[in-house]
Image (cartoon, rainbow, N blue to C red):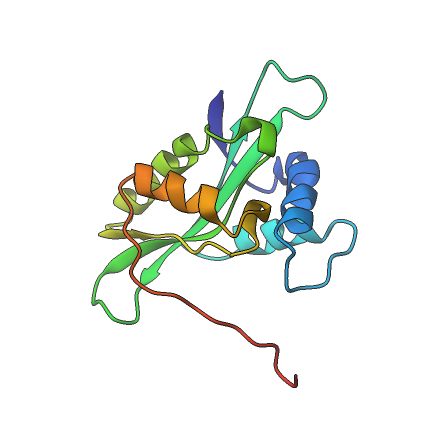
Length: 155
């Protein structure tokens, strides 16, 4: 297993895994063919943003088995940089290997003077109400500090 940084030259290698991410997270946005890859391309264009891929070189065909997108910014309640996860997904048969993506995120944050890492987990993640993701984050030393709610405008 290795981690690589995604850019415009290799973003299309994430097509399969980004489609699975959108399907499994029951995204609140409409899912169309290629919408996961388009989302990642949009993120690549944003300043202070990085996308890392988990690659299994022993897998034939589609060795990209996970990714993490993150962004460094000032957090609204702290006057310091934080690195925030925008998407984190590992295909089910490779879960347990996502910790290396968190390490890449931490290194990216440190390079940009971030003092905190922030992860946002959708309760639909993984089909278990986010419990597996919560356990992985606790194992990595994260602490829960807030809950977020959403509602579509006009509903």
